[in-house]
Image 1: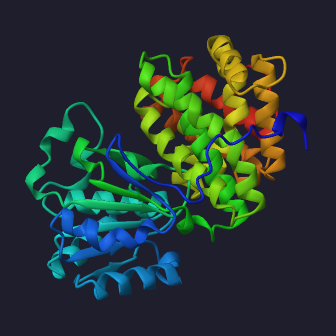
Image 2: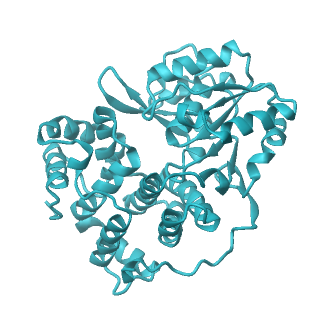
Length: 403
């Protein structure tokens, strides 16, 4: 193995560990913890939950078993799965209709980032009279929400990437202009989270890589954000160290529950840390997803080194410190960049955006959307239209110059 990729020693054996944390919400961690779901519903006085997931997961044994387990415990549970990989308003509207028709009193969110984001948004919208886009993350628009109408959410992630289970927002695609928009309210944060590594065991290796790189991008962009938030900064550093330790083992052996558990934790840490902000990786990824329906984590992984080199004058010291914390040889910005490039190669991540169908003709549209994306405001280096066009062009050519 490339010396840069030799994982550090794992300090804790998670295989037989169960834990409960209360930051940023109540989190129950451990293998098999999903079996506590009926009891946790009772703590929130949920008797008629609607389980929300995507169509692929709905057909798998894990969903059937969860439904059966809840019914055996006396819960009247329904199922909604009309959610596409980049959820749109129509998915939310259909979910709200299913919630109301079934007279449900809470939401169980099961799945990856798309399912969790859709579930959280449905739980928000079940008691609202305003349209969805009135709650976009702009100014104080969140104050328009009728909080009393929101449904409680229990989240069970099945991928280790987005960290949506500990997020206060959701990303929904607006098909009217093909943009991704952030729907936000502080109480969109799920009331309870179950991190069960066994739920991620069946994740295929390529998807394990993509979502794992998404978790890395969250922690990394939070770390590099210019805003002052020492708690988020510290969480991001440890999240990256856990990914350094666990992503390759999880990719190589999907049944490695220690690695799966660390990746789940690191994913939640990334979404907690990015209260400090994100950056141009997400600014570039969001329009690619909206226009070309690309997989979010994979897109972040492809653009990552290009954004790092663009931001280099502003983040060199930060990444030198990070490389030192990761115990990389000769800590420096260049050493960390080499680690990222080696990791991408090891995980079979494509080097250029052309692998996702991006062409030069897309650049003006994608760049304009990237500049307008909310993530751009916390990028360490200001991003103009010309800068964004240059970034997309270099990510198409495989050019790692700073620009």
